[in-house]
Length: 295
Image (cartoon, rainbow, N blue to C red; front, side):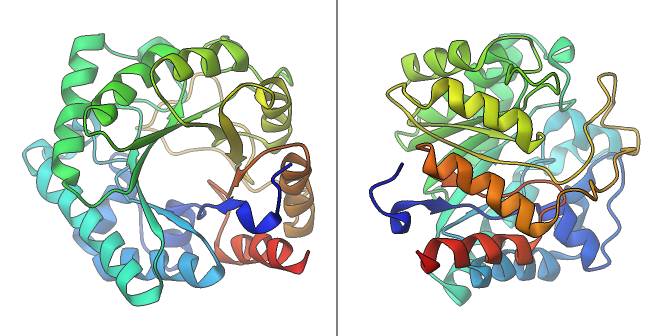
């Protein structure tokens, strides 16, 4: 357990969820990247809402600014502009609402949750280098998030590490209760590989909190900071494609109170980084912040 709850790092919640809650229509192709073109003020406002809710870290809206998705809307040549816009909006929100860390999001390059569709390593590394370069000097840290396998994460980590800035990795997990990655690799295997690449924090995200509980228990004694930012949605089907509308709905058993209780089970077990992903809005992050300051 952290020496003091004040040492817990609180991440923000789901940008896509919060954009939808503000009425922004997200296409199944480029998803939250569309808001950078159609509703940049709302993107900035979502960041501000999470900061005001108590987040210590906001994650850039660059999850979908990747070549394999942008090409679906003939926007690949605008990648640099879109990434730069996302970083500017995060920085402006921090300047307006509070001094927080800005994490540059490096996401799966094509299909989330599909380790079987991860591309060749050299192509992945080139794409991540392109995204990292477009982020400029805005990120305080990089988070390689929703990674489905060690191989997918490694390319993102190498590109981020070339900047000399701190790098975190967040893996997506299966729903079998073991805490294993979607690739079948164990959480310990993944953490050990990331430690060898110089990663400072291993997280688990975009997964059911029950799966994250198992993963954190497996790695909490390793020499690396850990934590998680879970979904409040139903699990993703194994054959899901990013181009198809997600069939997931809200998990009605996961109330705000239950989610916060589960996250703080991780904290009391030694986790240091918490937050939320899909389905988690500012109100849930605020409830986590209140729990941190109440004890």
